[in-house]
Figure 1 (cartoon, rainbow, N blue to C red):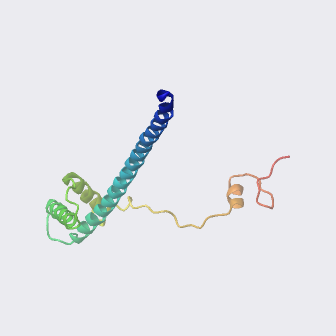
Figure 2 (figure 1 turned 90 degrees about the horizontal axis):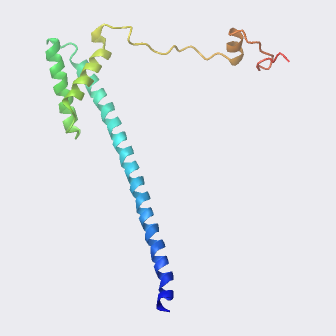
Figure 3 (figure 1 turned 90 degrees about the vertical axis):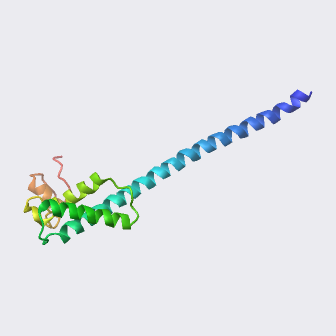
Length: 148
């Protein structure tokens, strides 16, 4: 008789234990996804800051009386110092070099004016005008005319 009375207690214990186990598994997955999201956001902010600092360093050395390699080394040092001052201690030197190189290529120092293409600021045309220019018949409401 004692065994029959103990069965519901064992079942309740097993159900609660299973619920706690799956609850912890769900929380672990949830926390892991939040950590990954945070790392991604931090990395995105670091790269944005790195690009800004590199562009500033390159632009500050435009009129300096130095060779190109000396300017590059000086800009790399300036970027490294700025990152250290902001608390970014473990940034790879290759990443800093790449950011300085990219900033140099984007700057006016390269003389490459073709790389700076911007969107054409023309106003948007109406749907009727766009359909009409493609040879699609349009009725007065601006709807596509069906041949029916």
